[in-house]
Image 1 (tube, helix red, strand yellow):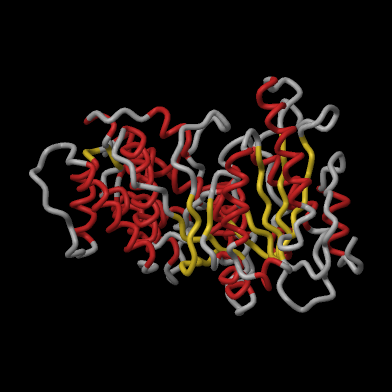
Image 2 (image 1 turned 120 degrees about the vertical axis):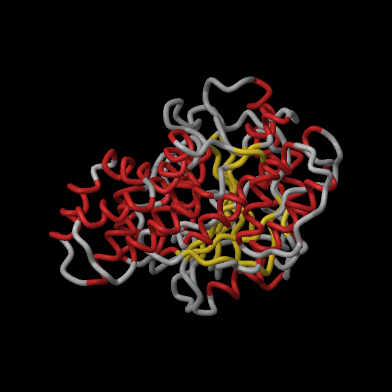
Length: 435
């Protein structure tokens, strides 16, 4: 066990940690980063992931603890439990490998299973991240970094080096990493993942162009933060799904979320039963018909941009003035703010903010990433329904004056190669840190 755990860490663990589970690891010397990986029925994928991790520089591997949280419920099927047993055995064998520091949290065996009510990917991430706090060597000056990854991912050979360099280079205390799904196929699943990644990137780029502070991808396998930020937001939540969205939102309300563009995570492009919604479910539910190929109307991001400019500029207004300005932008925006109790809530914000910095922080907390999404959905449902994906992309790319727009025959759904071309444009715009 690493000595000299800071008082703030001890206080956090006493209040928030889940004491039923323990971390099994023989090598925890000089650890300044922990990569936490939930795993359920992932035996073959873990082998691939470890192979890609082992391609990273040994100097960074020596300072990193790879923590697998192998989990299931007591009610899980025999097949899941049996594969998890094989996985645990395999991970224990890798713990003897001198080239990599591997840790195991057994949340699978009899008596150690996750709770039926709360258990899931968020719960597993929390178990691993909380236990990682006791594995760091706090006597070292380097940043102590918590990294979130998934068992069905692979990573580049500079993954660890770029994370270390980013966090130890006086950059923001939290970040999301660049990601890419595999688009090499030419089937229904490939079409599904092209659609889903296009949807994700379009939304984030729309938020970024609107000036939202919440314009970052919320993908569990791409999150990282230092331990101080983790403690500040009271750690990972225990949600069965969307744990990444809510965790990053909590971070964004307290610290800046940066972006690491210099290395890439490759999530699996597969259907999945593991969570009630997310990438895997979107892939499994997708049908390549015209009705499936829809995106938000780009006008929603223009309305959001106008509202954020009004709400966050230096000209302070009272709640009635903000509502009047919102009505001039869009009557639906006004209706939404009224429904969200803006007048009462913002009056409280004004009464409880003594400095400009405090006021701006409270504004950011009130109109957060979830409320932003709720506004987008309200506008969609009341005035601006979803439109054809490629019409939306053309309007959007014209808005940002992109000259790389593909040419196609104006069919509602172009061939896969054209769809890939659209996605590649969005990827490149995303990588540039478009503002």
